[in-house]
Image (tube, rainbow, N blue to C red; front, side, top):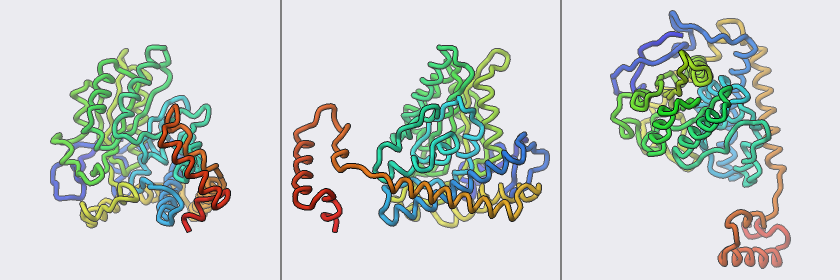
Length: 381
């Protein structure tokens, strides 16, 4: 791996500033001169590529399902799936993952099933239940609240002697404007906890561009203030993201010169689509900007790299597409086969039902008496 000069916070925009950051693959998917490819065998590289393709196809299907009214509001990850897959590939089974609402691929690679990712979107809360032995926290919706909690988990492990594992926490560039980010990073630096914080800088916190989030040249440079390691990486280059994350996790778990160091990684990337399916990005950004970023697409770059080494053939690519489509369809069928009772909507709202909640339950009972056991379908018609 080598360090290359790359674009500043608004890659592909009119910002001409240059900030040093890490790349292994160039925009076309070729290994950059002097760069070192991670020590992954052919099967591991193919598995990483297949997971990225699966994430891309899952994203497309999920958006389609939401547009059809079959699932709730969804947060697309296209453009960010390469970094998600790469960071989770660097984790060991013992490491903990703290995801946001967008880290669908990161959760999948670390052990959460595709059907479980879909179940909450279909209204089944059981999808939030994490299987035993899978070290993934339920997704965080509030911005940046996971940062101090991830630090706390890592600190707890340190205090109890569990230094064989680390915590990897995802956050967006918008999270760096929240107090929780600063508090979490500050404590991480003070206590040298075994944690890695991955800031997925997709250039926009919903509609707010990065240069309105911070006056810092980069997000990675903020690490200096907290006394932690900081690194900036091409977030559309899965190999670079993997290697940077692997090294950060090693540094977190295996102290160098008796010094354990947490790390803040800024993965410079782009959200190709909307913030969520209720968002319209055309209101606040130029489509030409998005097209420039698509020229660095992580799926295409990985495919080119693997093809150049004879690892990805037409036959293998076709087999991957078939497996991916089958997996996604199976997950959709499984999630849609789940059924629940309408009364479940009243559970776990309050410790003790409120008067208003009792009134709503009574209204449901009246609808059931009038329309039968499936009152909602009749009312919606």
